[in-house]
Image (cartoon, rainbow, N blue to C red; front, side):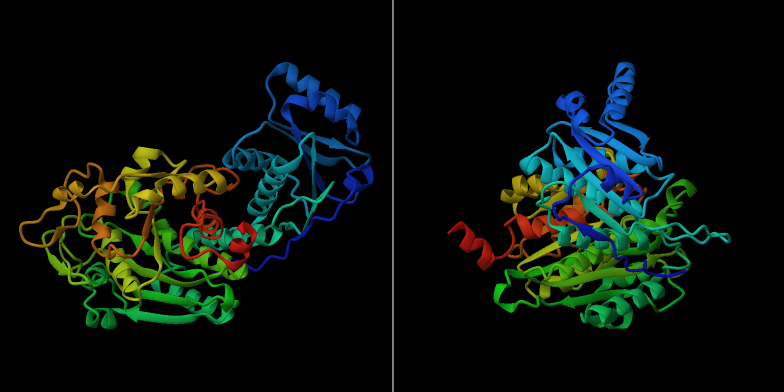
Length: 510
């Protein structure tokens, strides 16, 4: 089993090409996106328009239609019609995901995408969404079946008509980062354990010429990182630790800032002494998805030579059960000197992140963004459609929520008022790890993590409620969504919150 997916080479053509019968015949499948309000008239102008119009009218007479599949031409080439109205990025992506699923039984190697009755900025947004859906939908996932079926992968996408106006490089970079995040999360825990994960990260760092530092538990003890070491204590191996990946922007004249990405990488979570029941433990190999998203974001930013210096800090361990496992009522000291009263061993994510955030903060980045599959409370609050975000900069709430709307990975900012801290007051230590009743646990977890980030460093915490949704989310067809790569890339490149504006952007404004 490969620990990383093979690098794909999907060619995306944005040259002006006529969408006609010849263009369809040159591909294995076609998707046509039509304006819902004008579909009846615009379908006639398409290749095989009369047949498409009849098919549409028959389907429309039965019920409203958003996606319609048919076959056209002498070779019966699959063609999917998708009908849009003016909408937001999430709805475009969701429609694109449904359109791609119509092709899963006949996966194309060469796909042509065209629009009908859609112009301007809406056309660019729609084409970007459908391109992203084709990339995500065709990305292979790990398989250990004894009898393997070789699937023909997507090789080329043609965006027909006028120039699309989409950023092909960004679409490919975000897809690559999201694919790696989903792939790693899908790997079984006996394949991607702490040792295997460390090897993967070292291999990626070498390939991309990033700095690689591994803080093993011995070194973490010297650093005073007692919270992380407590979680790793029950392991029967010495492979747990914190990995730091160091990437520097190649264009040094345009650097806008220094960002630290932090990810929770619990390769398997038993719950520890407070053992999880089977149903809750079944998917706990996914508890490292926060670290996979941090890594995927770093890959996307590096591919685009984003104008940021980025350090990626990944907390890699298992939360095992055993005679040395950490226990409720222990008191441990984190790397920044804060003492923690342990309440529940299954709140291990915030323990591992506490020291990782403290180490990242020592280097005084311009901002810290962390990702974690942290609390069930956030899922209860939002379902798996949104993820929660928290920040020590409340004036950022509107911009963080806007980045979710614009990227299609939706988030909701939660309060972080200081009076929540009274619920975490401890009689024996500086702070309690959590409460017994878990009321508002997503907020209390964020308040806890804030103890390890100095107030002078802007910080965003993402509680990844949308990391796992049955049937996928928006354009992502797999249960593990890799939520956060697309969002964070958009936030850093377009959000304007972190660091100084690039010279190019400043010049454009001027």
